[in-house]
Length: 479
Ligand SMILES: Cc1cc2nc3c(=O)[nH]c(=O)nc-3n(C[C@H](O)[C@H](O)[C@H](O)COP(=O)(O)OP(=O)(O)OC[C@H]3O[C@@H](n4cnc5c(N)ncnc54)[C@H](O)[C@@H]3O)c2cc1C
Ligand code: FES
Ligand code: FES
Image (cartoon, rainbow, N blue to C red; front, side, top):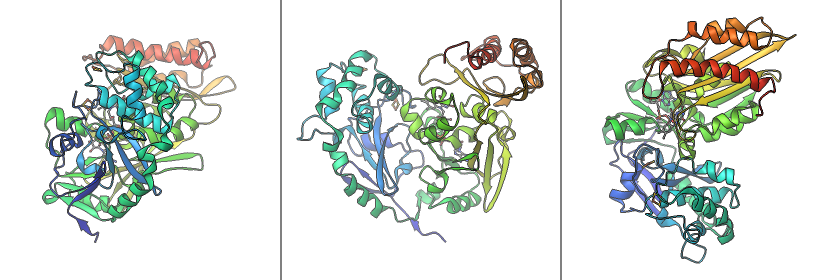
């Protein structure tokens, strides 16, 4: 029987917090602003889109504290157990005064009304800690999830580029105190399950404990990165209790490459999965940076993106095209199914009560595989797909012997285009086959119109993406 702790423990800036009365849906932002009076962190959209609420969350990994920028508005409080939460109030320069990023923002006129500024500063500090002299592309990528309505981004980009001239991470308080903070977090991490509020919050001790918790409470809401669940709480006022939190679990947070397969634990974030997958899968890096913004990629998990069953989630089409397999666990039993078999119908997945997604196994594509990954959305950054697609075709002796074409946004679930695949198989890699496959898409899908895109638009985009794939992989369009 796993020992139980009745309080969350974490660090906010320099102070240790022990909290026995957190609810499942309590946000980190409300806690900081309303209970700790740390009002430097702002609330803008309350749904992860604007970045005004950005803080750093440091977690122990292999004995070291690793800091990430996250959206505190949708980060739920129980998920920061044994973490170090850093708010804008904690920043300072090496000799007191403004932090190098803050001073650069002042000198480059990076702030007007100032509402977005603490969030922008926190993201730029996270970037500066990793790369004090970032490229413009790195700065733009880091800022994808931060909205500024009045200054304009040019001065902010200049400030980010200049921050390294004002000071370097080795002189920063967070870096200098890393070991001391690691020791404090290690002392909090007693390996116990946390249970709060009469069972409304469970933070399991490990994977086995999670399996037990879900068998005991099969109707509980699983919370991984909370980038969906946090929005349900804030925007739909859903009561998610009882909730079981899994984002911290080492067992679900691992990435292992073995025998031509990359196994990704369900709680691995987009950011952590990125290096392993984009190295193994050519052409995936650009697609990956179209998912959410940096904070969302630091929080949202591969498992959550699959488990939620959304027809417009970005990972399922990619992973289906690559031939991924899902590992599901219930109690001590595990089963593996092809990823596409998981999606039964809109809102209905092949998941039994008490069962959970444990991992996804992704075969490394063959060297001769022709791959294409595409996302079409209204905005380039931080937007949900109207249509997304993953394509994998293998050609032998000039003919396509294998074709896996998967789409999101075209049906009630992410799905393979079987008629289009059949139109390619056995035919020569050429325009005629791609045209035939494009026509066959009409038999595969009857897309719907919604406020994101009309049915006609989706059908046309899907067809054009196939053509684009052909041109990209035939070397006629620059990458
Ligand atoms: C601002 C913003 C931008 C976004 N941009 C994108 C985008 O560009 N592309 C995209 O695809 N999505 C996007 N999303 C949606 C979201 O990031 C993803 O769906 C994300 O992957 C969900 O993962 P999570 O860990 O946050 O899941 P959670 O919110 O924690 O959970 C989502 C659902 O999955 C269930 N669940 C989680 N883990 C498991 C598990 N291991 N087993 C069984 N059930 C589980 C939960 O119970 C819940 O029902 C965005 C969201 C926001 C707020
Ligand atoms: S308040 Fe907008 S992202 Fe959190
Ligand atoms: S300074 Fe006003 S929103 Fe950015």
